[in-house]
Length: 143
Image (cartoon, rainbow, N blue to C red; front, side, top):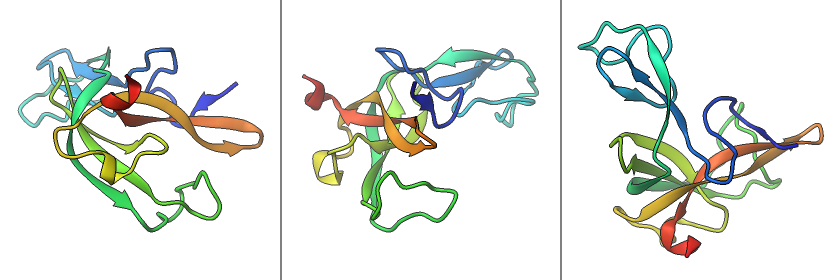
């Protein structure tokens, strides 16, 4: 049974969502989740509720990773295969979240403003167990 590479950051159902938190004092939304104290400098809140985030957004910025990141990064292929990263502004929250582009997509497939959706894909295998991660796929690709 596949498991999230980072527990509690996203759901793995048919319509996956990132899981953030919302401060009960100021309503600021955070991803990854906030705990202990509100990261909004104008707020002194300390209580949060889990909040499913938008499944879609628009590319705010992007780049590619031509060189293998250092440990603890675990490459899903050997030898290392470059991948694309997108900073995506979520549709409802206007929160920018960084993530890889879905397998098979490169920086040539997107531009600032491209609409994308959240998907879940395998990241690596460890001791026979598949670990999953969230990624962004251009919306045109899912139609």
